Image (tube, rainbow, N blue to C red; front, side):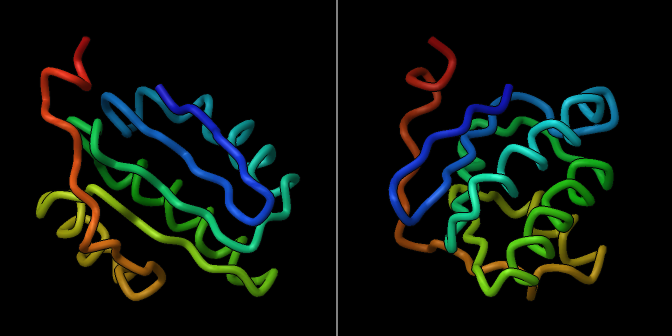
Length: 112
């Protein structure tokens, strides 16, 4: 599931569950909504992601690229080593700022 939250300068995507080929049908609509909001900062909260494949990585890369073309930035928070590895293998990790200060909520808070 992907939820979108907004503030005057920031769009935040909160992703939970798998970010993979099975979820790709929703990616174009979400990308269009995020792009249409035209915020300078996109924060992608990955605390609830259980699995990400190259399709999910391509979605994140397209969001970061779209923001960069408008002069914005994309921040990843709550990524674990697996997701960072997928982005690194795709050659795209440098497209993102990493929020290393963020503390994800305990797993039981995410599930309930």
